[in-house]
Image 1 (cartoon, rainbow, N blue to C red):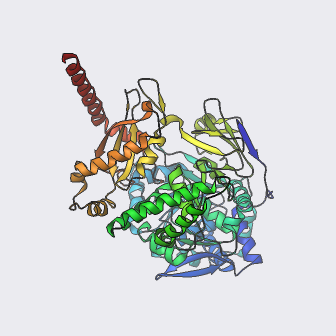
Image 2 (cartoon, helix red, strand yellow):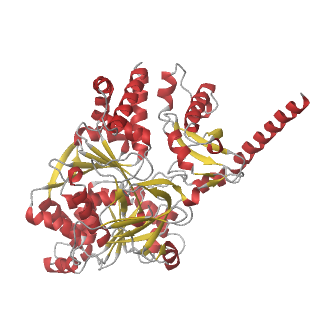
Length: 615
């Protein structure tokens, strides 16, 4: 099928804005808990009326500070309660929040603040304030930037005090002037190449998409007791969509700024649904396996994992899982699977996974655990999701059908095109890039995919990342990288082979998982610098490569791999803040290694051919 459209389920008045989602709850259900803030290890609940009061006080402070309608106010922070308050306060004041990743360098920060012409910025810490100060001291400074507030220094209280004399009528006028067509935010793509582009998203993008998503996913996001814990960076569009979705649905939203405490926070918050990226689910699986290995129970874990996957696959068969499989699943649940549910808080029934393909194995595993994983797909330019699998209609291996008000088309070359309420207004200050991104109403995603007759979308690769070997074979890197990355020792990997005789792989080791793996395999602890050449480590990765190769043709298979000492991280610039590998940078910085790898392979092949001829 070439095109699939889903009509709107909910229509929205053009005068509505994101602020109205909060105001509606405050007026009609003032006590409904919307935000939960972690204070001294406990979760403090904030009802809708209380949240609105804090938002309005903060918004008045912004107005008093001279923030005008349409002005840009940047936020540079980890994910925390104050960010959501600031987002809604900026919207309420008629201004435009611009997120900045808290890991951004001074150069990256300067680019965003300059391109957006931010008049103010709210940072989290003194270290972030120092980054902004450095950004102001370079390349002519940031003349538009007038104010810098710091969350850890009491920014919300300072703004509330500053705005205490602003009349309610002035604030109401600001809010009333904003409608669906107005700019809501500029999110700078984390981009794997070049300067990030600022995607302009409107109030309509967020309001219409979240309201229709709530209607279509009501059993997940608005059933009694529904609650979710936000731990992805709020500078990313996925988390930003979740933030607005939670308010639209009227469910309790918690924040955790440190992923190192995520498991503990899950245990105390007990989310009913989780929104995350595949890497987190991979980590949960690998950590559980290594914990079992450390306790001498790795065989039991792996048996339970196989049963979980088989049980989930059985759910898709006409007769469902057989009696024997059901019995085995019950035992596996008692021994292993219930502990994994416990690690997710014990209350989670659904998870929405996006940002990259989850993979069939993990999808089936977690469904067997008792967590219905709904894969989704989208980009910054589509306000996060265009497609999400629906409960009861999950087709593992796909990202489901389009959300209401959205259309998806597959172009002749396989590229996914999108149209409808999620699609952004264009790139800020870049009309040429905007024009190049559209053909009529259709936005070019740059991803490749296919659709079945029911409209379920399968992602097959990234258009610009397709490898074409010297033999003319087209290879989608994700088909090789995703399965290999599931190995507990593997942190990141990059397939290489464009215009080369065969496909190879650059691999980095997971330093967090390495000690447990070594102990489970009876080996002494060692640093990554030694482990990268250890025969047992290499043998284990080779087995994972061999398993991956069974899923593809010979021409697509991984013939060689090399382990790198340095991992790909956000801090060293090889990962985007949304944990995507900057493939071009990796290949550029490791070009000599790659050339040597293929030269050695050619020399070895020459020696083998020479020996055969001599014989």
